[in-house]
Length: 382
Ligand SMILES: Cc1cc2nc3c(=O)[nH]c(=O)nc-3n(C[C@H](O)[C@H](O)[C@H](O)COP(=O)(O)OP(=O)(O)OC[C@H]3O[C@@H](n4cnc5c(N)ncnc54)[C@H](O)[C@@H]3O)c2cc1C
Image (tube, rainbow, N blue to C red; front, side, top):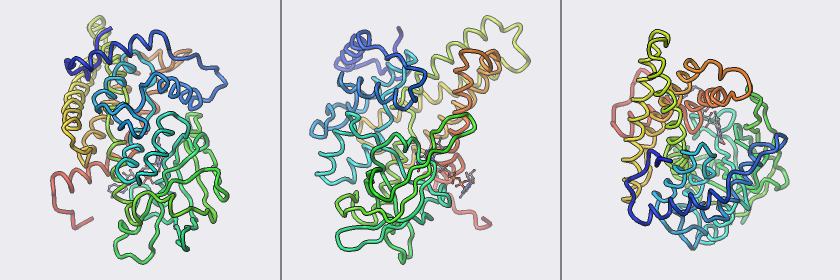
């Protein structure tokens, strides 16, 4: 087994960690999934098993239930899993970052160990029917009354809320503020609280990932607010900047497996591949190599203590381009994957179409790059 794309020619302790993990994985393989078991429930079992081995939250400080190692250690584990085509460590790092940065000491000590163990499953309640890209335009309102808030509104696209215990919720707490960004606060919402209704939505591919979340006179305690009143916007930006990266997810290693397969087939069938397909495979390889080089640089920056920041929009765009082109090309090279038993590439192809939407659309990433990284003037015609 070769090391994955994010193998940094490892320092000794990282090398040992990889070896320990491989030994653990040999004894604790991915469990079987009963076809009737919903995928999120199965992945939750996998989360708890990984945690029992000490493989979740490696970069979270020990006092909050982690192992106090570096981001590179967590990336190495994702890399090991991805290279074996095994589902990665659950995607909770971006929510953990929000709590680490904005949560009170009491919230960090109480919520983070439970999140890492999988005792509480979290979802993200940001988007609304009228507020996705324009998130600051949200209308869910938390009215303060003494030490409580009463929340009314609706969230949309809340992934896997039906399997979740807690929701990181954004709501407006000030209807008069001149700057809407300064009027938003964040809360930890228990989904069994009276007044909360979760309604799953069936998508075209048959999955029920998305939910609508209705909030009718939901009472939240002041202590359930994360950060100060008005901290919701910077908290949301921190959350999405960690959500938009390709590093911790094992995605790179997973793409790497398919790239290798494409390279091999392109080599073997180069005389017979349809016109243009060989150069499409070449473009996939280039996109992938660019993404890997970029991810390595970003990992090194994180190790140096730099926050994810607006550059995560570059991460997201590169990842989206590489992923969408890869699965599009793979379906042309392996058209048989469209049908029959396997169909895994087809499933990944379908989901790759969402990459330019979730975590902020590609257009919004370009706006962020133009404004915050390149500092280009706004287009007055818009
Ligand atoms: C698979 C998936 C999972 C998701 N999970 C969650 C979740 O768990 N929690 C959550 O809160 N949300 C979630 N979302 C929602 C996601 O964050 C939003 O879909 C996304 O931010 C876009 O918002 P919207 O759908 O309202 O589209 P809109 O904002 O209505 O955008 C429509 C189109 O207009 C374009 N556009 C809008 N404004 C501009 C602009 N200023 N400049 C240029 N173009 C613009 C957009 O790029 C897009 O093409 C998920 C979405 C997907 C696809």
